[in-house]
Length: 88
Image (cartoon, rainbow, N blue to C red):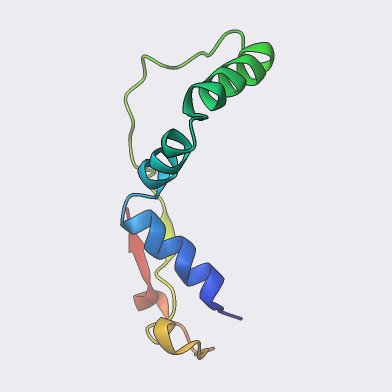
């Protein structure tokens, strides 16, 4: 089943997220510094050493289903073929 919430997540990701807008709201409310302090405290307590920061990002080299061609209509086509796959 394809629903709007799964589409919205995709749209927000494609557009680069909405962290900037959230930070504007936190700043307007005067709690942005408090938010950063809380995040740094909580994450710093759990993740004291973060390995791999020096490794460059790379796309996975695998095949995945490209999704349904009728994704926007929330209809399902159960007759997918190998043509529906693409390689990153």
